[in-house]
Length: 342
Image 1 (tube, rainbow, N blue to C red):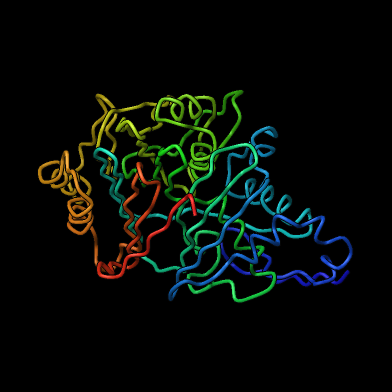
Image 2 (cartoon, rainbow, N blue to C red):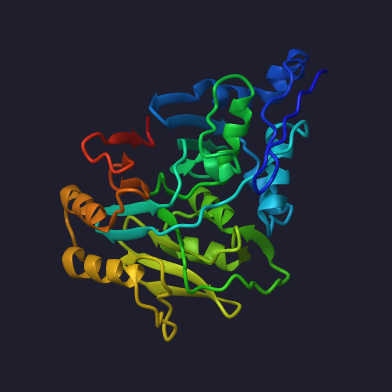
């Protein structure tokens, strides 16, 4: 078999292609789920891709093996499972702003970052978990911001984005979103619990939690490590409008009831002493949009909290209809709508 490898810079080197010979001898039996997912990969508008993965993408085995505390460790596992050991790949998460606001059956989120990417909207139907839809960008796999899967084995690299969701919703209407926490800590005590990176924690919640209570319980069973040397917190919302932010402080997981999350700590007695954009966005959303009732009001909240040059996508998850409406690059007149059921 001829295996061609190209290494590029980034958090980890990423392999772009492997030889066709891998698939000739028993390839369909060996890579059936992966090949079907790659076949579903398509560009639906400029810079926006979607694909659907049905079957086993190895997340349960990843958890059973103890997870991973670094992006590098997680990348090794992803590569080994998806390529059956033939390739190496990498994953990272971004540094940026972001805002979320939840009310009733809607969960709204801006993803802010200071660099563009080709985007991926991913549908997953795992054998042993809940179906979900999630959003990410290929740049956050460690690829350059202009990389996109053109054809062939680039698709195998694209599948690694399953492990790098930055927000999403599952078939139970449970939503979760990653946000940078500017006053958070990157120090995590290493206990005898299994390890997860922050993006793997999002995949955990999407695959196995039916509501906010279950999500919090699942997260409490792991040591959750930050990515790219930045602290993160998770906004979580369920079909019953139980909305929380999960933060990690002083070696403890802290859960705070809140409908709004931006980029500063909200844990009791640990509120940020900072001033700046995060607090301003939080105050503005709380004043204008607490208890909003319609898609239009949610969209207006996202527009008010967005940045023209840095908001890569804004998404409204409809927990009752199990659909997501996404506005890429502040293009408010041309949304894309996706359904978990389709």
